[in-house]
Image 1 (spheres, rainbow, N blue to C red):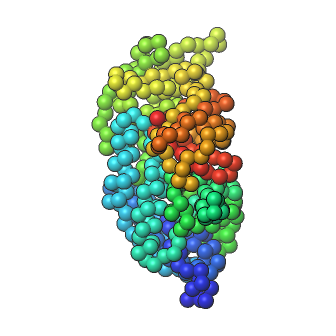
Image 2: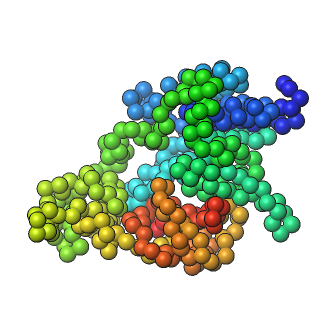
Length: 371
C-alpha cells in the first residue's frame, strides 16, 4: 500500500458493473485511497431471466476491478432487500399509491446495509457513482453535512438520496458530483474499461426492462373494478387499482372510447386522474390540463430532513417526481414527520406514494412521501 493510501484510508465503493461506479472507483484510487469494490446482489427471484442482468453486471464489475487494479467482493443483500424495500413496495401498491423503490433502496440498502457491511471490512468511508455532492459546513459551532445537486443537472440524483442523514453523509463520497456525464464516459473510454459503452440501466433490477404490469401481476392479485368519468359514466373495467398511476395515459384499456370530440372529429387523450379505494373505482379525465390532474398544494408524511430538523417555513423549490424542473413553492407547515407545500403554479399529476423533495438552490433539504 502506498504512503498516500495509508494517509487517506480505506474506501469501499459500490460497484454495480455500470460505467458510473467504475469511474468512481478509478477516481478514488487516483486520489490515493485504498479502494475496495463491493458488488451488491439485491434480487434473486428470477435472476436467470432476460430482464435481470445481475450475472452480467457482476462479470462487468469484476473485469473493471481487474483493469483498474482494485480488489472486489460480492455481497448478497437479497433478504434485506425483500424485507426492507420490496415488501414496502408491494404494500404501497396494494394501498393504491405509487412508491419510488430507488429512494427506499438508497435509504435501507445502499446507505444502511451496505454502509454497515463496509464498516465491518475496515472502511473509513463509502462511495457510490451517484451524481450528487456532499459539502461540510460550520453551523452553530458544529460541523454539518449538506447534500447538493450534481453539477450535471441533467443527471443529478439528489432526489433519490434525500432520505440520507448526517451520519450517512459524513461517511459518503460522490466523486461524480463534480463531473458531467460526458466526461465520465470519456474517462472510461480512455482507460479502456470493458463497460465504457455500456448502456445506463433504466430500471431497478427486480423489474428491469420488463412490462411493469406483467411483473406486478405475479405478486398482487387482480381486483377488477369500473373505470369512470368524473360525471359517473362507466367507460370500461380495470384489473386492479394497483396497476395504474395518476397521469397514466397508455394501458388504460379504453382506447376505443372517444369521449368529447372537437369539430374536426379529434379528441383529447384520456388520463388516470383519481383512485377511489373504497369503491375500487379508477377515474379518468380527458385532456392533459384537466383540473383533476392539477394541484397547487400537497401534504407529505414520513418526512426526512438532512439537517435533522425541518427547515424554517419559507420559499423554496420542490420536485414531486424525478424528471422534473424545480417548482417554486412555500413550505407552509412542518410538524412532526409531516409537512405541506403550496405552489405558485399548479403541478401536474401529483402522485401519492412518490417523493416530494425540497431544495434551497443547489442544497437538497430532504423530503417526504406525498399523501
